[in-house]
Image 1 (cartoon, rainbow, N blue to C red):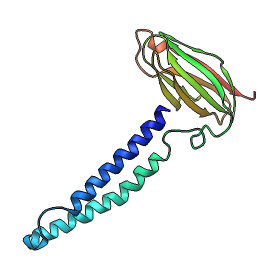
Image 2 (cartoon, rainbow, N blue to C red):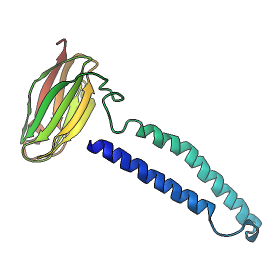
Image 3 (tube, rainbow, N blue to C red):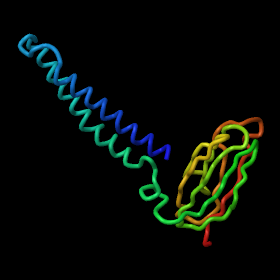
Image 4 (cartoon, helix red, strand yellow):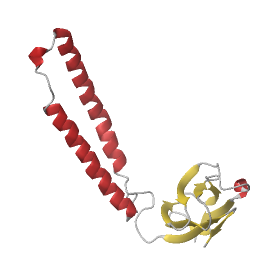
Length: 177
């Protein structure tokens, strides 16, 4: 819900900024005949550079927005009913409602904290980060992920939470259900 609202607000604000740029460009100042030949050449160069940047970065910006608000259908989570795992961070441990999930099935992690902020990071056997979210007291973040390979994944805290932070880990076993 919050992510959907943030996505909609972002689109509205980006549209307003685009209209602002267009308005300024259309109504900008001096007439071309008031420029010297060198200024005309520089103005044309700036104009081409500006529209080149718009053509390069505009589609890139729109492409990155396609993944917002990280809904289940477009994210790696896929469609369908998800296995739900409740994860709670404590200084200095994780509590998971279950530590075994099925491979190639979407998993929905409901992540919160009982004390301070923690970073909920899921790592594969090679310790590559595969998914992450924030664990905050009084708030539950939802993280959807589909594990495509069987194995044992580590859950590590990604935010320094105190003296035994380095010991804050648990494991999730992924395999046939």
